[in-house]
Amino acid sequence: MKGSRRQGTRTVVVHARDTMSANSNGTMGNPAEIAATGPRFGLIVSKAVGNAVVRHRTSRRLRHVCMTLIPKLPAGVDVVIRALPASATATSEQLEKDITKALRKQWDI
Image (cartoon, rainbow, N blue to C red; front, side):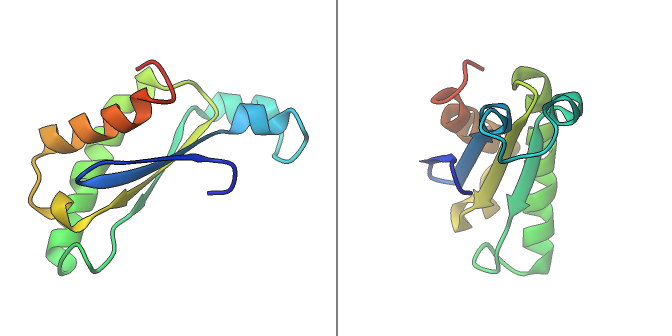
């Protein structure tokens, strides 16, 4: 993502961008609309992670972790999570720990 910060762990690479600060220079949409939506998450789970069944299971685990992080993140944050092959065998707890560790570097969560 353009203008984002990237942090990698063993299982995921997390790109995060504060769209509210991007709005100050007029490059994004209406700040009120973005603030009302809360944080947004995007997932990238490539074929390198595994076959379709493994990729879908990994996506479901990542989606669950993202739902638990919504109250902890400020509104207007875009987060893209790219799953690495190690995420296929990781537990949900390990995925949450890795994603939280990556996001903690930018926000106090």
